[in-house]
Image 1 (spheres, rainbow over the protein chains, first blue to last red):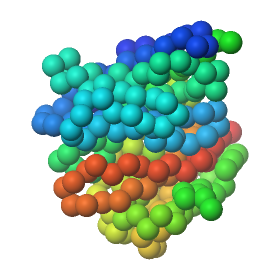
Image 2: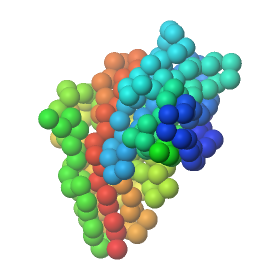
Image 3: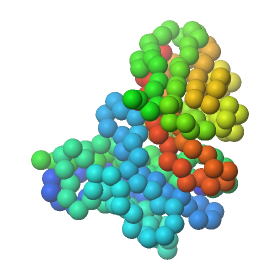
Length: 113
Length: 116
């Protein structure tokens, strides 16, 4: 079975500090991994994805994520957090054999001014 | 222009009623999805259609029936609404290239359903 886990429900970080939102996955085969962000009362927006190639993926709004095969992780990072980054972040893995996404349970990020 | 749109944005209704939520995408995508997000923000896929054909049908009560009149539309009809159906329902779309499942999903703004 394919799945994705986000171990932290809530992450708080001071503005200007680096942030990390954690994600681990379990798939049979090579993973396709995604990060989405959801602002209050909005739909999910795509941030970045890893398909193949360079383990460090750069995405929208200065976010990046590092694919680590040995640790089966795909943590989301940003060098300097902004208050406007406060939102709900979802990690997702694509089912290669089928046609659906498995989403993590979400991590609520709060950037404190 | 809105890429993926849903109507209505809010829906408040009584238990036992039948209601529909509409979704349209103007991205030229082949595949469309319905997701349910509960009060704890947990997101779960319900259905997926590719070129008007149902390809994913998760464990969802048969009171929920998707209908795809064409590639650009995927509507969700719900019969005999129950209190537990209260949630936010998201439509999404993506391109589909056979078994190459790299394509990003684009989400609509959501429909907030409250069953009283």
